[in-house]
Length: 304
Image (cartoon, rainbow, N blue to C red; front, top):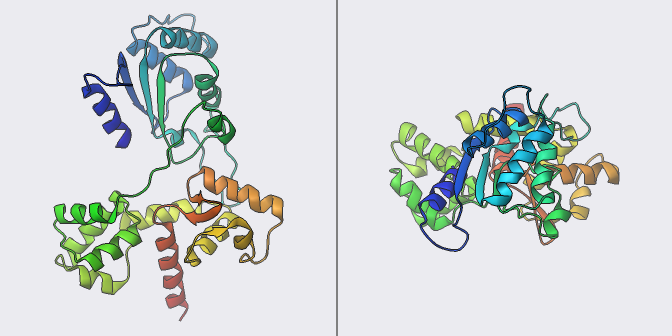
């Protein structure tokens, strides 16, 4: 949704710095086409005649594309870039980036955008940070990465009111903190409050259960697909009320992993946007802390 709004805002802007794109092309990668299919589609929309026979190679298509991007200032938007990656396996020691079969050329294409000179701009929306976009290259100014935060508590109150849910400052803050300002999760919560609690927020909070239905299932799939060590790291972060350093966190893991495996797992959790780091301290992204606490509590109640 964000990338679509960005493209619309730029398209509607008649003047202003950075709004001088001659063409905007938005493409979803869910499901992802092959890299050559994407390049062919881009070139067609840019008005380039692509021969059908013989079938052009990746190198030929990229040469044509960058010839255009050097002459024109275009905005290319790729939404859902994580669709090009194979899901992780719980049997792995740690998450390894693997492209879905036939989509490996995307890695080369991503590198080309900051290795070659051109006048255009590419916006990528993804839950996974590709290895091709290294933090070293970002520090050198090859590209910029923006990690999205949730909306503010005040915006949470306005959103819930617009959805038909009236809150006090106290109940608003509880919902905001648990949902981590996620508009999607707040929409889901509002539906439950309206459907099953007659818009009574206090009655909903008394149940102490937030992550049900599709949202809970989606969060469970993301976590359960992770290797065991990465799940343990996330659970330890969820149990900590404050952000912690990597050195402090490892002391809470039993059995304690070796350093190489531990830091590899942390790096992967950061790259797939499940763990964030602020001032050398780690914390969970989005609503995962609340979800993991709720799940641990539910498992404890079942055992009792």
